[in-house]
Image 1 (cartoon, rainbow, N blue to C red):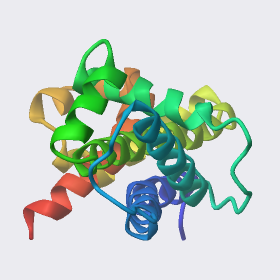
Image 2: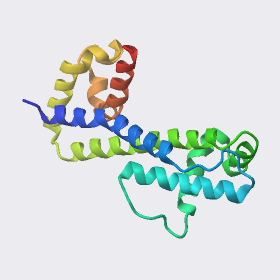
Image 3: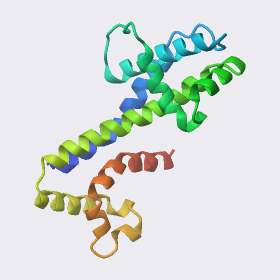
Length: 187
């Protein structure tokens, strides 16, 4: 018999692969006419269309692009700030004109996958958390330790594993990433 925690963990573990699969399918199906862009306007239009295409694929939407496509560009630029610096549009245009747009699109895709994965995991954990009492959460943390404690660092599980119990929400949010890393070890 599967417990509430088992069902949650199964759902959480499927999120990274599902988001990644949908996003990568969108990347592979994106109609890219050329890898080099001629100017800033072409770069902005391409990034906007690409981001909209990826977002629709992740969410399973089949709506036509809106007339004002700046939403996709703004979101992509926000994601790329960490990688390209405080002015990602200027840096992105420079890279796209000299080396091609594929590295920018790939970076945007990877960052989008991470953002959507974290968002969906956070939503599932929050829904679960709101539906459980303090006693149920304590029992669930004990169940988690019984089933997955051997995968956690010893300093977190020593004694009564208070750090795991206190940070159980964070542990749940990290669980799918931990399991994915564990699966990659065997490859």
